[in-house]
Amino acid sequence: CDRNSRRSFDSDRLIDENCRRIAETHGLSKRQAEVFALLAHGYDIPTIAKKLYVSENTVRTHAKKNYATLEVHSKQEIIELSNASYDA
Image 1 (cartoon, rainbow, N blue to C red):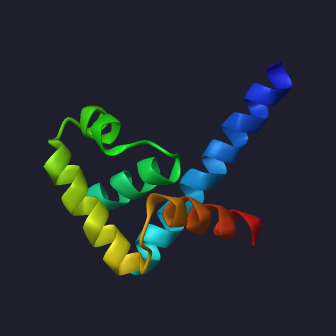
Image 2: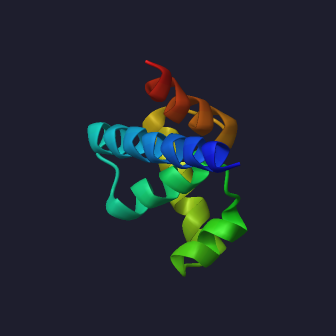
C-alpha cells in the first residue's frame, strides 16, 4: 500500500514538472499553467473552479486558450501531452 501511494506521489510530481516545462515553453500565464496542470491530472471544470476559487467560465476560458496554444482539442490530449513528456 505504501509503495503504491509513493509511486502515485512520484508520478504526480513528474506530471507537475512536465506541465511546468510545457507551460513555460509555450508562454502560458500563471493561471493558465495552473489550469493546465489540473486538467493534466484529470480534474473537471467544476472541480478546478473550486480549487482555484474562480468561476467555471473563467476555467473554461483558460482551458480554451490552453487548447489553442498547445494545439490540442480535448482534456484527454492534455493528459497525453503531459504524460508524453514524462515518458520521453
